[in-house]
Image 1 (cartoon, helix red, strand yellow):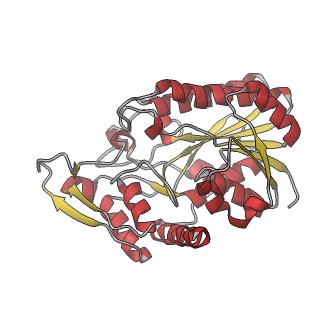
Image 2 (image 1 turned 90 degrees about the vertical axis):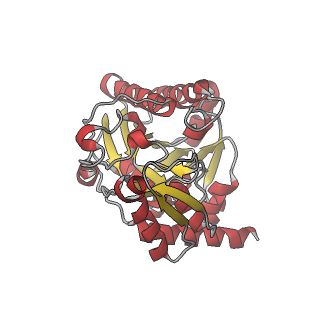
Length: 343
């Protein structure tokens, strides 16, 4: 490998590992900053895991982080390390843990931004989320689903979105006042090998299918046929990160990353069938059907919608390469190959 040295935080995660692969494929030299190699990340990286450079550090420890960056000498940083909603938010866990989000997402990001400024590392690409927006209501929600532009108001309602937005705002401050080139990417709902925390929501149905597990779920007619969300394959997300590291213009800007296509649960199930993997067994019931086991929407209903992805296409050259069926088929192949290696 040759080209620029690009340090990836969270490079052993289920999205970060794809970013590492895409960076290497583009001819640059990925360096992974990690607190420890996860088996999931290694499964996605494959043989590349033996070829790339690894640097151990915790973004929550500023002195440790500076020392690691001095050793790595990157020209660009792709910052994907983050706590997950199912580790801290009330919608997911019995005991919410907001300090975890602040410590890992806000403090970790500002530590990295400051280290990049001091060490004169010119660009930081930040992995954000559509959770940074206000809930998708009015024309951007059901039933119209007008695409949500980057100019849509930001008024997040959960810890994950609040901390992601705070980290974005810190990055813009460093771009506007301290000369750091900062680009933020807001991802649509993601899916891919080894994704966790989605339950029986559409991404969870996809996860079970690519692992060969048949799951049973009950959806209301509205949730199954009419409610839409946007799903983007993690391999595509990794490519978006790579493109953002190389884009000539974009400092201080935020870009939506997705497919620009809304899909119902029914569309997801049809795509699973078209991909030739384990199709979930879905019972569709009336909207007023009783029972706590009935799925009445998406996992995070406030953010079920469709993103306007035109800015990323124009400025970064990014458009999703995988539709749902193709992404599910590829993810199943990656999962199967990883299972063969482990066995």
